[in-house]
Length: 355
Image (cartoon, rainbow, N blue to C red; front, side):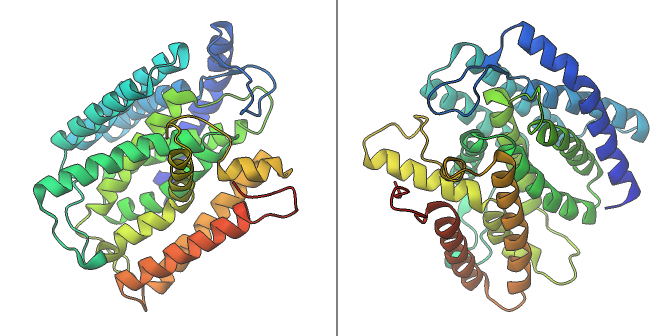
């Protein structure tokens, strides 16, 4: 991380810190708040201004960067911004009036499809994973669209305790930024720096008085932004990591980077379907609910997930020097599943039975 990168992160963090108080007061005055209920941990109404602050700071930071670098907004960044804004508006409506899950899914599919139409970031080659290489244009379109919709909802589903969604995103974006910096992709690298800056402030303030939640407007938008940035990351054709084959092992690295939300999402959806419930119906079956119910603080749970993600990603880099892509996938999938069980699901007492 060079001086320019650090400066960009600090600029965005400073903007977010300055604007945090006013945004908090505005959302509180407008009563755009998250009210307590049986599945939530907040005991009073909490403003849902985190998503608005994130979008506002990103837009302001981009303007500052355009002035400093004297460079226009390129196609990739423009599409990312437009898609994020569309989902943010949908999320605001959902925070205010509660949209039907089917309608939200339709909007997400449309935004995802338009994103793919305007950019060249299809998941069209698995580089030998599962023995699969090129999967063709139609297969790549379907797979990438499903991937984007999953990401949009994944961060929304783990945004159940303070700092978890922002913490997972921060950990992932640090690795993504490292790859972008090595390819000299200035536009997206600058955007990631701004996103990291505002997420740092949101993460820290989430564990302090006068906190704000991301809301659906923030969590869905954040999932989309991170998902598209990872797609760009996987589409990199030339990268100069000295010790790892990033192109071939990229899909496995991405799986490990998001092991927690993927494991949690898969488990919860299966449980809901087995009990003939809507997979989109909120409940308290998530991994983080189990740890909080055992007495762990929200900060502790988020730090556990971030620390495990960091260690697992670095371990996957190390193993990729010795294992084939398929062997690495099997080892890391088994390891993350075992950790998920031991840390989050294994009963610690007779009353702490698994779901």
